[in-house]
Length: 278
Figure 1: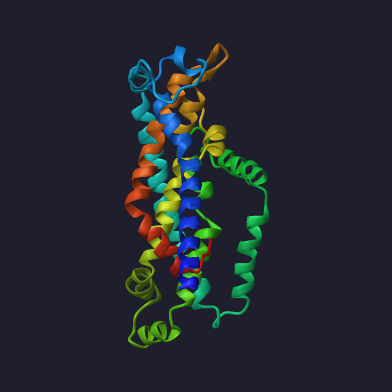
Figure 2 (figure 1 turned 30 degrees about the vertical axis):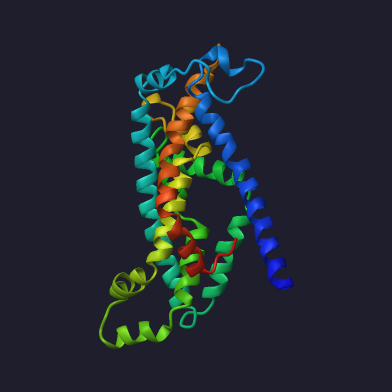
């Protein structure tokens, strides 16, 4: 009985601690949401208050009239196209690194080189990516924000770890039945990695949707701006349009929140299937 009471007390304490941590993480988003409905005079009024005293949706109207949905279209194209290419490349690389690990020498060393790439600072990678974009003639083109980042070591690692958990006898049996490598990959291995595919799709979409540095360097025309660059444009030489920034920020995070809430159970399953522990 004493041990049961102790475990119950620990569970209660951990639950309370978890709720406190969750509250601390969610509170800034709640504050952001309510502040987006405050007039300019209330944003920096003292004392601070959570709820707007004179709610107004003028900032949302202004952001939409400023062409916000065009920025949404650009961000959506970048995220969807980039995610599709990333998933295909990651799945193929993961398949090759897992299935041919015993057939081709140095496959594991090749994978180690992939992992070493994660040690390179992001700033250096961005500079080299911009150089490649310029040489390819993709400056001020949305594809210049997509192609340099379609490969991700995280995605390759997730697929490789998952495919390594699948017996190689399954692949060998398919080969004996006359199936081509692409047929084995498409009809057997890819469906078996569906949980990893869903997880990487969510992660990749979030990465592309929130990408800032590369689009900032590549895109110059306002018509090609993504959401994150459009939000930055509200900071001008004459001041900062805080109301527009708050409204645009809320509109930009809503799709991510909805996607995460709907598909969060697949994230846990995909991470477990790929052996990634957080």
